[in-house]
Length: 223
Image (cartoon, helix red, strand yellow):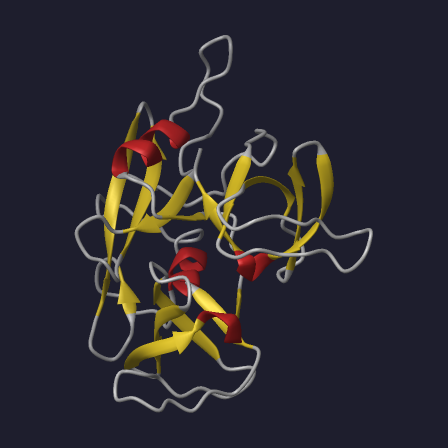
């Protein structure tokens, strides 16, 4: 996914990636809480996670499995009707490629899975049309079918945002509130995230208390 650099960074090791403040880079791997694997202009390297602000996308669910994606997109209400319409989609980390992504799309009573490919120049694609980012690919396929079947017009559509979903996050570091509007927590705590509208500060709940927390201190988890 994409992130914006909050500060300039000059790598001191051969596996580190230089970036300037306000650069938008592609984040390929977030398994290490302190150092993310990223790509900029075709070059790949490690950057300090605290130097970045992740650009949020409701459709990106990160490290979930194919089965979990199918469960989410196939959700039904109490009457057995699907909560999401055809074309509802999500993007997740690829299970077969640590730095790759997969696209899961609801179609009828099933879920189709597409591997998002990328080439040596850093472009992303499903078939032949190239895109500069996964976000650009997603936006394109909201207007052009993701299916290669000429008789199937499967356009990407955002999941039904009216469906409530509990979002949990695990604390990567300890945080002590500096004001009454902030929420303290310990490393390893699992918080309920109630608002992600601010990229840098999430609203969260822990043990009956609510407040704002720095977004880069936690990692969103699927529950």
